[in-house]
Length: 87
Length: 97
Image (cartoon, rainbow over all chains, first blue to last red; front, side):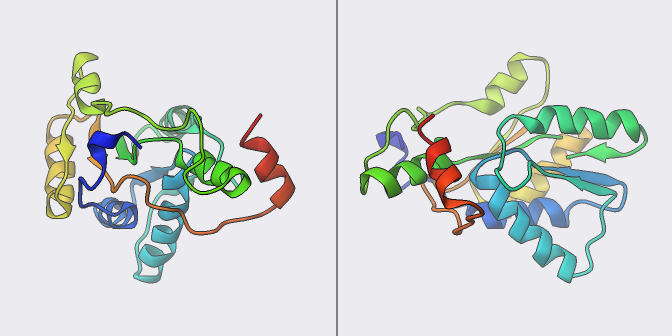
């Protein structure tokens, strides 16, 4: 971590994932790229789903959390479902 | 709509490195402060940096109003992920290849 960023910021990644998912709706696709964010977002999916959240679909990088899939998955979602919005 | 959880590095990889090499011993996985939101603006999109949890949803709505191409969020740097292991050997090996 860059020394200038130590101690800064106040947004927990789970909090971010939940806030974003709660703002989404049944016409939205959730696309997750790889890395730490993936794991927190998966937890948020369970929490949001338990609360009744519905989405058009979810694309995630899989068990090994492959980096870089986000853009291509989002494009694929939009190509196949042009009236829906990938996030 | 793109939301970036900016935790300042390749922390999934650095955590695996620390498991192999010891506490605070990781290499080439820390980022400097990268302004993703201005990068998005530079490419012609709308970008916004959010540092207050209460501003996340309003920022998302503003981004949609702008026909958003980007939104940047800053999470707490170096927050450890939950332990998610599927194959110990492969995960550890993958972090140093």
